[in-house]
Length: 156
Image 1: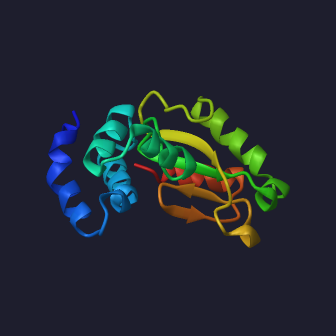
Image 2: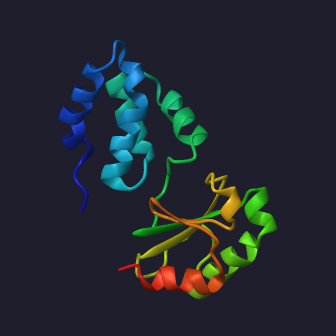
Image 3: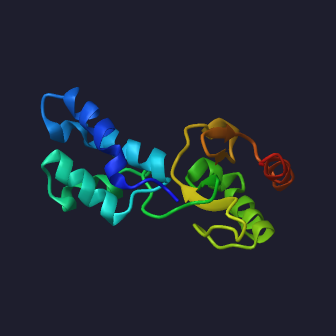
């Protein structure tokens, strides 16, 4: 069971102290929440807003604008398939479909064992080596279905 949000009060206060205005600490606090819980819940957005003197909708705007923030949990291994032009032209869609079939889930669903979630993302800035798959924070280039199987097999 994850710790209560109040357990982050001290860390949040230390982050806020680094900035001239509390609102400037919004992004680092959102990163802290996501690192701790894996996603940013409605309750967490309200908690952050209260500590920063903002309205919850202002935090929601940040969470929905920046693609690195998640509003729901993901598996231990978050598989992010680039869907932008270079990757699309080099078979990102068949790669995505292969992963979904192999894992038996739909987009943004967690496998029953909690290990994997497959998501589509915008450009991962490795267009010359498309298609690209990011597993958590590790980038894999020129990924074929066969290479994807090897990547999955290497995930604990």
